[in-house]
Structures are given as C-alpha cells and as structure tokens.
Image (cartoon, rainbow, N blue to C red; front, side):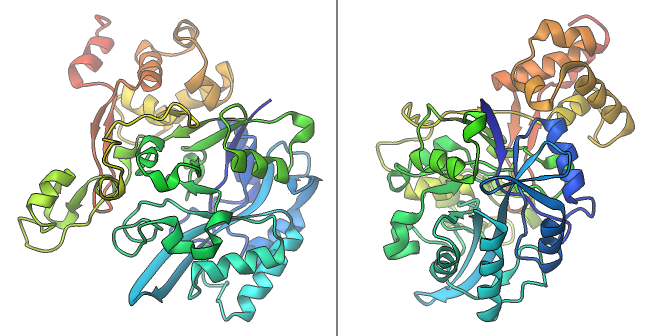
Length: 418
C-alpha cells in the first residue's frame, strides 16, 4: 500500500501561520490532497498539545486520528535552536518525530525545566545546542527521530551559509550516527544533496513546512507499507533503511521557486549564480553590501569535485517534481491568485470528478483530464509532470517564479488554435 506522508507542518500557534490551521481543517485538506499520514506539528505549544490530547484517538502504535476521520497523525514539531558554538552564533531548525503523546509530554516537561519558553510560539526558540535537544528527546523515548530541517537555507539550517556547519559530524559529534535523515527544504531537491558525500547514507525527506492549508503536501514522501503494518515504528524503519523498495520517492517543489535558491540582495533586486558571486567576492554590485548566499552556492561549496551540477545517483530514492494543482489552474486561466473564486471552483470540480490532488497530478491520463476540464488546464498538468516549465530562481527571501505557458501559448489555447 502506498502511503503519502507529510512530516513537517505548523499549527495556528506558530508565527506567520494561518488561523485556519486546526486539526479538523488539516484532516479535511489531507483528504482533498490525498495525504495518508500527517505530522501534528507544534507539539511543544501548550494549547496545541492540549488540543492534540483532547481530539486525537490512538489507532495504532504512535498513529492517531480524529474521531470518524481518515487522516493518520503522528506527533511532530519543529524547534529553533539559537546558541553559540566555536565562537559563532548557530541558528538551526530541527524537526522532531515522537512515538506517543506520553513521549511528547516528557519532552515538553524537560524543555520547560531547561528554561525554554514553549508558550511563545508553536515553533519555539530555545537556547540549547542541538545535541542537548536530541538528548532530551531520546531520554523521553529512544524511538524519537531527530531530523535537521531544510538543511540548506541560509539563516536557520544545519548547512546554512549564515550560521551552519560543514558536515553532520561537525554539527552532531558523537551523536552523528543517530541522524538518519535530513529535510530538503523548498529551495533544494534530492540531486543537490546527492552531490555531498557526507550525505550518502542519509535519507532525504521532503515535507511541506506548510504555514497554511493550501500548502499542505506541496512536498511529501511516498512509502510502501502494508496497511496492517502501518505504525510509527514502521515509518521510522522505512526512513532509516532508506531503501527505494519501501521508500518509493519524494514529491518535490521546484527548488528554484524557493526563497533562497540563488544568491542575491532583495533590496537591490539583484541575483546571480554562484560563479558570478565568486567574481563579486559575495558583494552586491549595486549597494556594496554582502549578498545572501543561497542553497545552490552552498551546495557547490560542499560538493565532491567529481559530482558536478546535475549529478544523479540512481541507487538513491527517486523523486518527482510537481506544481500544486490550484497553481496550475490559476496559470492556465491567467489569474494571479490561486485563491480566486474561479480558480477554486475549477479546483473543486477536478477533485469531485477525478479524485485526490496527488492522483490528478501524478496518475490521471491526459485524455481523462480533457473530459472534465479545459484543454489548457489538462496540458498544464501534463507539462508539470514532464518538467516542461520556465523558471526564474528565487533569492534572498523572495520566491522564484515557475511558468508553464508563455503568453503566446495561452492565447493559442484560448483561441482554440493550440
């Protein structure tokens, strides 16, 4: 049985997150998207944890559901660690998976005893070294998984250019052998990770880090797990084993659309490739301030010389790049907002006619698509599947732009000449 899992999300108690992020609404969107297993997110926040205890029912070892609902939840959170090591301020985001509500309670109690303010934010900022955070989690339950989040982003990541480290061993020391997985983040994809020898034996996870309901499962993981065996431990085993026979593939955002793919300076509207940054000595040519070094540059810095850009490791878990369905509809209709009434009407029509968003994006043939929607929408879905897109990379906190059609192509569709 194929299981689609999104292992990193937030609640309405995290900063800059939608007030609509309730457990019930998350379940609803998971069913629309086709997500089987969803992280609870934010389990350190007292009010959210209270809601988790009140609303979630255990349906298997470490697997929870809402009453009479389908989505399976596992306990998870993201924590921001800001601390000093090696005379440098380190800022790392860490995802934690926990096997039970009981383990979560122990983690939260220990963090509070260590002086951490868990009430301030669903993704709390704590002053602990990531190694101390990991020990607290494993003391609560050794089955907890500690996963460095979005590892390449400049400001808050294990390999980030602003405050990170150059290897897993430098970051985790004698705990390195217990780090089984890392998260790609939206500004990186698996091939970028495959260039790093230090990550050869590490699972590459992709999750949405969603701050709103529509962004659920914009990245995800697809596992092969028999329904009777689906529980927290089995999910962790599949991740640890990192075998393409059971870890089938990840679903990826186009990394160029992420906030930090290229180097640049947003205030000056300047961006460039790593080779140009090197020539500029990482200085913005317009204002003479430092450039924000993006994920692509940082990968180049740490990559093996014999693993150039575009390096593919066929032994690793494969991936599929997709564009979210309502974004495809919006572009096909030449409407800027994915949340517009016309876009959402057609989005719901597709779901009602063809099934879940993932099934439509991954599996439904073009002929069937064309029977229920406009030809330009059907074509957009197929082009997304095939990677036939035009990309303008994001940089320094500014999203990149992914285009499926140029103006001429869209006009041809609308004139029925395409």
